[in-house]
Structures are given as structure tokens and as C-alpha cells.
Image: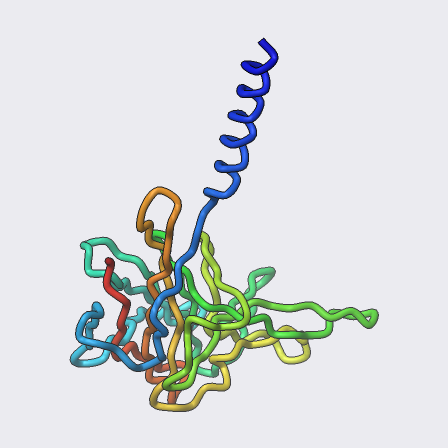
Length: 224
């Protein structure tokens, strides 16, 4: 009887620790560099470059528009780009309402975007961080990005113009003035029951003019 009892205990402990060891495993992916792609990647180049069409509001004099991109070419839109522009490139107020020129991105269908906090002072010696979409240079290693990846259903800001003196940052892309800058993206893929990997990619923007950015091309590792 005792032997049977000890056997059951041993079996229970074996199953318990085996289950603990079978947690989620992430396997390494090949390194993806901003602006670089291989023949096996999903790759799409816009010709001409994709510019967001806007409509003018004659009351606020703001122009706004949206467009969408299917990043993995599966028939579903994975990215929604929203722009909100003013001819004076400044924040604007009507009564209690405030309008801010901005460009925001909404990633869907489990896509993640690389973000980096922008430090700013918020009074009484306290600093805070505002998360903005990171701006990568050509040939940057995207896999080993050392800050954060955002997964969720909220818009993330590319750039934002707040009132002078507000102290709130305007984002990494606010200062971009180059023909080629890149957004880092990734999506988790399940290999088997407990094993996953990330498929990395990038989106290339022409960022010479903040209020006239365009999407040039994008690339993403193919599914296994």
C-alpha cells in the first residue's frame, strides 16, 4: 500500500514539474535590419508612395484623413494611419475644444510596434515618459530593440504638436527630416503547442516634411 502511495506522489510531482517546464518558449528569429529584406520576405513597394488624402474642415481649418495597409497580405488591414493637419502647424482652440496636429498609427491583428519613451518634466521635480513610435535609421537591428514593443488596440503617436509651453514632448518623428526613416514591427507566430517566434519587419517612410510624410514600402518575415 505504501509503495503504491509513494508511486502516486512521485507521478504527481513528475507531471507537476513537467508542466512547469513546458511553458511558452520563444525561439530566436533571424535578424531583420531596417530597410533590408530577403527574397523570402513579404515585401511591398508603393508606386507612387502612399500619401494620406485629407479633407478640409472650413470651421477649424484642420485637414484630416485616414488610410489602411495590409501588412501580411492576408486580406485584412493591419495598420490604420490617421493624420490631422493645420496650415500653421500649430495647436488650435475653439471654446473648450483643443485640436492638435498629429499623425497616429493603429496596429491590429496582433501586430506590435516599437515604441520609446520621451522624457519630460511634469512639475515638482517629477519626470514622466510619453510613449512615441521609435524612428529607426537604415540597417538598424530591429530584433534587439532595447526599449518597448506595444501590443494593443490604442493609437500610438508618430508625432504630435502641443501648445507652446505645455512641456509635453512631440515625439521622435517630429524631428525627422530625412528621405528614409523606418518603423519597427513584429507579430508573434505559433510554431507548435508551446513554442513561438516573432516575425520582424519594417515600414519605410519619407520623412523630409513632417506634415507631408508618405509610406514608401514595407517588409515582413514570411511565416514558417
